[in-house]
Image (cartoon, rainbow, N blue to C red; front, side, top):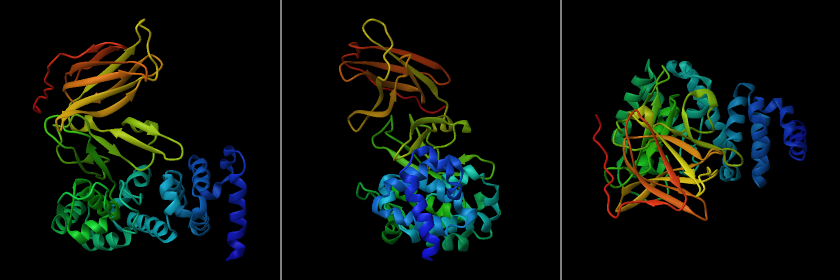
Length: 378
């Protein structure tokens, strides 16, 4: 075994010491598009780098793309604690589900990578959940011909296994939820997503930061059927709905990317609001006192929730001083500015319209008293 591992390990360590462009010389570690991320990730793994050397030394060729995708998109905190057995079990059973469940073959490779293969959903601890869930969903949905049939069977079991109850702020894992029989909305979401993914069904988290018509927020599950359509519960009263894949989707997927962060902790957030309800395109322009556009200004959008104004979105202006977002119809408070000076205004958006509002630094256009109103869904 040392004769196999030693050359690969020396090769990897040598690559980490040279320019990132050398990542293209790593054909063994998946497609070129992930190679630079793999180099960076293994460098960030610190004392746990040996786990990833072992993974790649023992990874079958047909799993290499998935392994490279996961490692390249893994946050630093996961790189430090990921263990070999959990990673390999997750990888093996995700690919096995792709072959076991007939409908899974219709799922595109891109959707498989972002929404079936991932080992974690949100902020729950890393657990080796896939072996248990895989055996369970085979028992429940092994004869399902379609994703919807499989979802119905899984939901019937999950609905009796767990229920809603507030817990601690930190997310508990799926086994803790199953053992206790309850979890808050995000923990129930994690449980359902793990079950769907174990059955080869693309699934991801979605949430609204704050409701505009009542207190609190909410999180839930989205799943994709064979036709490429995402399915989800009604949320037409939400001002904004965000969805999160694992990793960063390709730019040509046609989704509105609310945020993209590359580097050591890569992730993306999708603004899915247009899939849930008619929206307005809100454009905000920030100018200084001389009428010049302000680049890099932070723009916040607020709703009233829990007795205070709560931010539901943060945008940043481009070189032309502008930023935009798709958002539900209603009233909002917006602020924008720099560390030195800001501006604020109460605004209204109309469905299916482009609404443009200007903010001039130093100008606070807020009435002494005002209501933020939100129309009922039509």
